[in-house]
Image (cartoon, rainbow, N blue to C red; front, side, top):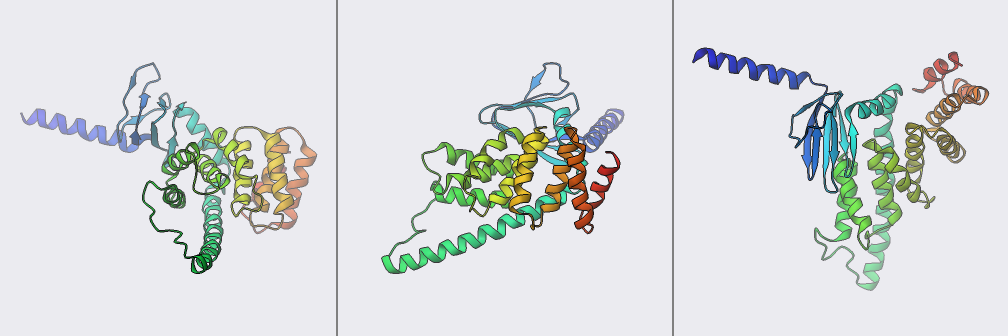
Length: 303
């Protein structure tokens, strides 16, 4: 009996160690989703803490999604998607090659939060003045099924980094008859959430739609995310157009040196060495105190 208990204990301990040191595990699953752990056609239902390998394949149905932890990072697999763990790791590898990229995202999101709050304060000021004059109750009678409440909840989920849940909210709003707000704004939050969860191809069309409003508080970030998405999908010509627009429109902004670096990298990939050098030189001359300075020097050495 003691030997049986001992063997079971060792087995459980070994399993715990395997999960603990596994590079990829399932964090949560919802709706219709399946995993092929060994990549040999053996589809099963996923469960929390299930370890996966580089050979594993995951797929979701119209109402399904999976959240994974891959090499310490959370990755969402959205609805109607089939992808391999190796492919997801390759996408993570793209971002990790840009050492500063992870630090850049919170700064970008803080910009969105600040501008969104400023816009909402101004709007509430107008609404408040109108309600005093006209007796209008702008927020009264709202419930959880109200599109306005859903819209605000979606924005909160985005701010909290709950991008998978934000995607569900804004997809639902855009698929319904009305978003209780601008379809461009909803498209931004949907596209940006998809960008954060590495659904780059899907994010581009929504971000493009949101950029129809050039005066919107989210336009600058939509342009950045769209440009990075094109780079990550190897659409280097599109990335050049996007980052070029960013430099022309926000040349004195916080993210200008990052856009210049990506312009140089994109030109370098397509073989335009002279144009690449021109952008790296601009960073060398004017941005020696930024995260991308040494990246530009390294890129120049390889030209």
